[in-house]
Length: 278
Ligand code: SF4
Ligand code: SF4
Image (tube, rainbow, N blue to C red):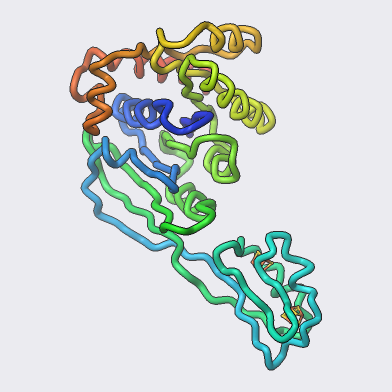
């Protein structure tokens, strides 16, 4: 079973929910796919035992073969390769490594070279949680390749909890593709609900079953409850706004590890998901 935890924007408590769910779901593997800003490791505190680089290809043009016909530039919808007057310009940071320019080049002038875009770390964290996280290098535009490799590292037989990137981006789509269930974490404020709606629309289009966890319940207003009730979306749990939880988060401690009275929120979420996903 694969469960994605996502949110309409950063800072809603997505990582708190993902890490504490993993802590309360015996045998679960936690994957931090929020590769632009991974922070699950701050709470999980893993003993990292494995590390590998993730590479992406970019085109190299042999100007002895190239006749500047322009086919590669016309093909590339990302404008990552641009035949100019005397040479072909390549913008490797925005190349999506689709391989298309090599195929359309009739002069066989294009080959590829690889470059590192980030790393994947693996190990075991607090509570003996199996943990894998990706880390996109500073300045890189897209972490989709890293997320794709993270997904390949877990088996279909495991319970996997994926801390997904926030918002409805390409990276989020890659992280949630094929999951059995998604947990949308939102604060009950007008901005929180507005951002959440875009993620809800994405999940509906992808036909992924999902429910909502209201974090910092008690703040804001009732808009989130009216919205969910109007769309028949299940509220999986209300985690109340609490000074103690905020303080634990600020110092990078997992709330369930510090105080077991919080475990029932996550056991409840897991119980409801388990009933939905057979
Ligand atoms: S398609 Fe090939 S020959 Fe044409 S401009 Fe690009 S690299 Fe040069
Ligand atoms: S590999 Fe794809 S994305 Fe990269 S330059 Fe070639 S056509 Fe563009």
